[in-house]
Length: 103
Image 1 (cartoon, one colour):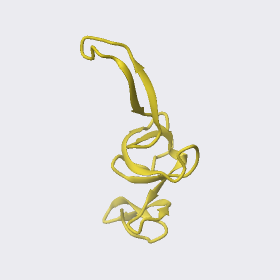
Image 2 (cartoon, rainbow, N blue to C red; image 1 turned 90 degrees about the vertical axis):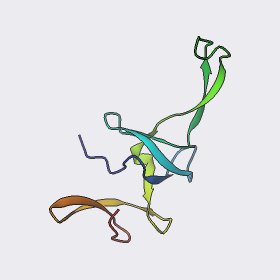
Image 3 (cartoon, rainbow, N blue to C red; image 1 turned 180 degrees about the vertical axis):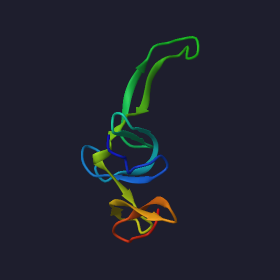
Image 4 (cartoon, helix red, strand yellow; image 1 turned 180 degrees about the horizontal axis):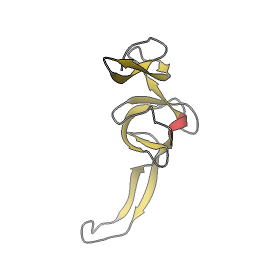
């Protein structure tokens, strides 16, 4: 399994699909499925059956995961960048390939 370069808390831009160009913060990453949930992007309508905790029920909007390959990290300048790893002080750290800044 390849190492994922997108982490929880990163600000990303969607590169492909219906939500192309949208930006948001990664709230959760599913490593096994290579997918991530981005806040405010890819909202789907989900029907909820009435229950004890939700007696009203109804249609709720929920964030659906996007594939990691459709996401690109946004660097400090607001531009999309690829991510690389380099060894610094005995630790592997992520850096933006366009600006060479450590993330």
